[in-house]
Image (cartoon, rainbow over all chains, first blue to last red):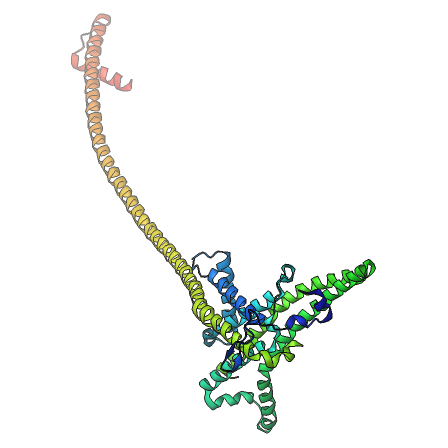
Length: 262
Length: 164
């Protein structure tokens, strides 16, 4: 990517640009331009499909690839079994899709493809995307909750064993904490991904500016920044996995509320 | 911050493409492929459990057969031992009977032999008496000139022999 732009604005990497002259595509009056963000969503989808396809050999003694895919499905299955119980099994497809989609998106956004002139785009650093994912999870919680428990679902806002004089105070607090869930889900992922990428970009601009300012600055500023960048890149890979895990874990916890109340 | 500046212009395209791609992931990967992967795992677990159960069953059967065989073996051994004891007893009785017969034969021959010996000795004794009495008659005839009747000579020899 253009170094001069990056030096000026570490937020430039989050800019959405329509590709292939699709800026004016419309559907029912809404713009549906095929942007760089959409491109990376498609790449994520295809790679995820290929990854799972490699684990579909259905061999009795699994190879490495099949083992990897099976360990991911087993991981999600175990997580739902632990958090929701036997009723959690039917959510495995959704939680698996959510976890793997976010994980692949986060990791793909971290790939150093700038070296070969491709600009990776982390669409999970946009709250329109994380917001939609969070609303989807929240909707599932609401639909399952009301479908399974009807109006009794509102007892979620009165924790078991609350003395009745406390109910008028506790219930609004619980309601607010419940309604905040989609926002916390969406913001956590968006902020974590954006902060990491901004930090990396700022440090890389230090490296470039320091190097351009002369050998002394390069050694004094550029090298420590580079070392820090390497460390933070490793940290970001960890964050990519953790944020995908947290999103999936919180969604399964919320589904547990809907399935089993308290 | 492009996320906010471009919000109005791009939210519809972001949401649209996210729904398309995540929908594909959910329906093709999540609903289509993941259950089959999990099914494979479940099948494998079942097979392993089944194999283990079969191995355990085979082992139990082998144990049962061995116990069975051992019991039969013990019975056979006891039967053989009984047979041997019986044969020993029978042959012992037979030997004893045979020995008794042989003993009787030996005893009979001993008695016969003794009779023969005592007969021979009596005969010899009479002969010695006869010879001695005739010798005594002769001696008294020659020395004393007395003719001793054979009866008194015989009685004197018998007395002398008995004092012997």
